[in-house]
Image (cartoon, rainbow, N blue to C red; front, side, top):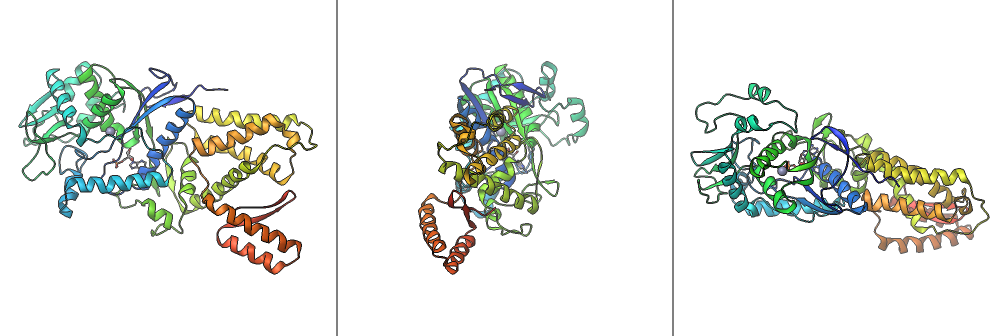
Length: 495
Ligand code: AMP
Ligand code: ZN
C-alpha cells in the first residue's frame, strides 16, 4: 500500500513527503477560536479540515499530539495593536466578567465541534493560562536584542530582525513592500516602525484584562500565545502548524519571527493553511454580516437558506472540496450534497448488514481489480495532501459494488472473500474513521423500523395494499424508503 503522505507546505510552497521529526510521534498545532462570539461555518470549515488530517495521521499509525488553543485574551478588535480586547469589550457591554464570556463561547464552540463530529484535541491550552510563559519569552526577546520597551509596552523590532533573518518567509512578502503599504507613524505611536508588533501592551486604566509584568500592568500581544503554547507542548521545532489562510500574515509570520528570535530555531516543519468558506464569493466573516451559525444551518432559519441541512450533510459538503480551495456556500450545492451524503450513508448501512456468502458466482478478475483500485485509490487520494474530494469519488466507486451485491446483481462468488472483506473494511474505515461521516439515524430506531418492515412483508404477502401504502407513507414522512429487492425487503435513506 502506498503510504507516502505528501503535504503542501506553505513555507516551501511545495508538496513534500511528510517526515516527522520523531516518528511515530507527530506534533500538530492549530490556531483555535477567539471566544468572544459564536463560531460560524467558516470557522467550522477550518477545524473540520484539520480534524480530517488528525484522523488520517492517526489512521496511518502516527501518535499525534494535537494541540488546539483557545484565544481568551490579546486579540484586539482591529487585529493590529490598537483598540480594545475583543473579549474585554464584550464583557463590558454585557456587564459580566471576561471569563464568563470566555466560558460561554468556549462551551458553545465545543458543542459545535461535537455536532459536526470533530474530534477533541489532546491539549486545549488557553492564552490566559500561559501569561507567565509569555512574560518569560518577552524577557528572552529583550535579552536577545529583538525587542524594545517603550512606555511599558514591548515591541518586536521587525527591521532589525530582517537584517539577520528573513521576515516574510512564510507569506512571501517583502519588508520593503510592506513598509510602503503601511501607514506612517503619527508621533503618538510607541513603535519605532509601523511593521513592529506588540509582544506586551501596557493596559489603559479602563482595560479589564490585565496582569502584572516587569514593564507594566498589561496583557500579551496576540501572536505570542501560539508561540509559547506550541513550544511548551510540542517543542522548539515541531511537525505541523495550521490555521486558516487569513492567519498566514501577520499572525504566523510573527510566530516564526518570535520563535527564531527567542530560540534561534524555525518553529515548524510543515505549515498548512486552509482556504476560506465564502458566500457569493466573499469570505464568510462576522464583521461582513454574511455568516451562518451552525444552528441556523441545521434548522434552515436564515434568510439565505431555503431549508435546513443535517450536520453530516454539511460535513459531506465540506469534504467534497479540497481544503486548499475556496468553498462557496449555496443552496443548490447543499441540496446536491444532501443527495450524495444519503447515497453514501445508505451504502454504509448496507455494507454493515452484508456478510460473505458462498453463492454460485465465479471469480470475476475485472470486478476484483476495480475493487482493488478503488480501495488503493482511497489511500492514494488522502496521501495526496489529504484530498478528501478525490477520496469521496473512490468511495462512490466502491458504493456501486456494495449496491450490486445488495440487490443481487453481483454475486459474492464473483468478488471473492478477500476482495469482499477489503471492500467492506475500506468503505467503513474511510467513511467513519477518516472522513468522520456517520449515520444520522439513531441506532435505537433501527429495531422499530425492522419491526415495521415485518408488518410490511406480511401485508404484502396478504395483498393488503392499503396497509402497504400506509407503512411506506409513515417511513417517507421520516425521509426513509422501503426497498423491495430480489434478496428481500430493506429500508434506506431517501436520496
Ligand atoms: P477566529 O475565531 O475568528 O479567530 O477564527 C478561527 C479560525 O477560523 C481561524 O483559523 C480562521 O482562519 C478560520 N476562519 C475564519 N473565517 C473563516 C472562513 N470564512 N473560512 C474558513 N476559515 C475561517
Ligand atoms: Zn495562533
